[in-house]
Length: 110
Image (tube, rainbow, N blue to C red; front, side):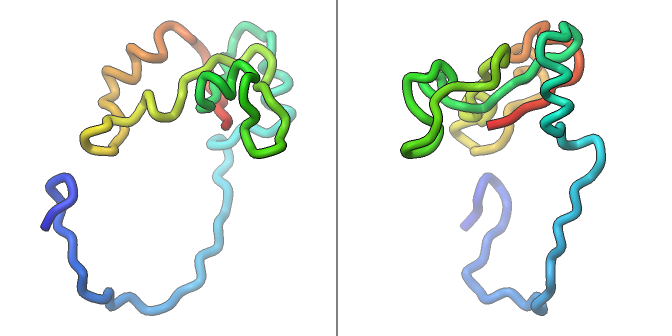
């Protein structure tokens, strides 16, 4: 068997138990203050990965949740950046086409 050209196995793995401790890396995440400062600045495009009906506010993002998006954000649904055949991110060239001329840093959220 293979998954997208990569080997897979049904055998149990031999990795020993371990403890994973997540540590945010500076510069990879935008804080609330970062996003608030970016809104309306013209130098940053805030993207979200919501479905179009969630972005427009027609459907809440979670059951009984608040509908809508960050004011001024642009919508690029998560499924639009995934190749349906391979379930991998699209090639960089295609991603650039999708992003167009959004310019500046791109904080994103869901």
